[in-house]
Image 1 (cartoon, rainbow, N blue to C red):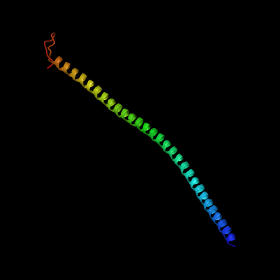
Image 2: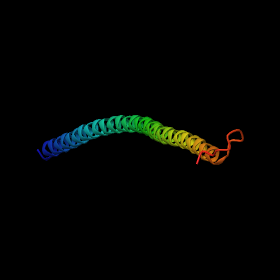
Image 3: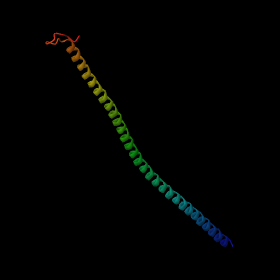
Amino acid sequence: MVKKKTTKVSKLEKEIENLKLSKITNVLKDFTSQIDKLVSVSIALQSKNAELGMQMSDVLEEMNEMTRLLKEAGTSDVERKFDNIISELKKLNKSIDKLIKIELAKKIVIPKTGESYE
């Protein structure tokens, strides 16, 4: 009878150990599954970060181009206005030269008549 009980106890111990091993195996399988999911998510996240980095680079390039175009447009507008001002100043200078010539001509005595334009 003692032998029978010892055998039963041994069987029970083996069953308990098998249950423990089974639980440990299941826990390890779950853990491995969770790690696999974590690795997959991490890879997907790295891929998204790389994609975002490339998109940010594209946006920065476009912003630099837009800034350059705006500067160029501003410079062209200023240059155009400056050119217009220079053109107007040249016209004004020509008008002043004509007025000076007219004033000088008025002061010159015409030799035939002996009269002056003053």
